[in-house]
Length: 301
Image 1: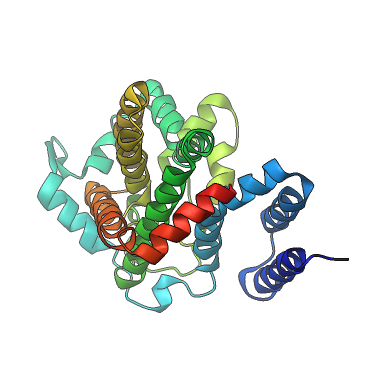
Image 2: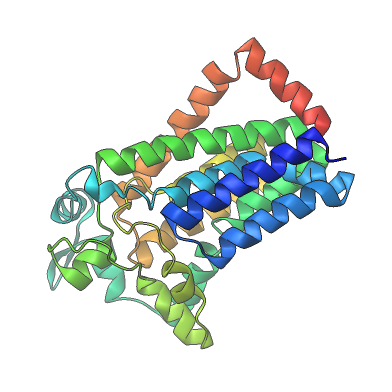
């Protein structure tokens, strides 16, 4: 006899499949996600706990991916030149060519060493948070839920800003000018130099799947390392804190060096991180019902 919880699981998976098939656009990674969740939940008690432990991250991914259905450029005017002008005003670099944005400066002063270094940091913007979450899964399940809770809130705040202020990344202005071209494919921009150096197609293949190129501000690439660092401090990871701090600086540098973000995007991302973490810790986590649920949920995983 099929258990009720398994029936709910399969029904939810079917609804998600229909959602991506009819609205988002079915891709192999959708099928892989469905398989991992179902197989992980029913295969073994340990894998079931893993699925439950990472459920908030899965919810984040589904929400982000589903933003393809209603792109932010349909909701508000895309800003292309405005962020560039603000960037030059605040962080312009004087050179023989005039005042350059940091992106423009790095584009004319790149090196193989910095190409490899920036690519190494940038490829870890999701793996490092997930590895930290895996560590918390084994060491501190309650903090794991808090970490993912704050992570989800920060992302939701960022998504709202994407719709309020659709903004093109630096590489878009360089490649297409000020013309707004909807459904523009993603670009690896300066990260293609990393691919070329190793003769691979890593970043090119990743950015071809970009849900929306007009979502440069705020930079959630800049927000994630802050969340990891803050909860690394809470977990009292001495060496980990140093690694996470280095990770933060590396991601921030790489985002600008590769032409994916302006400095103002990074600052906006940092603001989202601090607002999201504060909102979660000072308000959401103070609610007794939510706090009790987290305690009970952490015992299940």
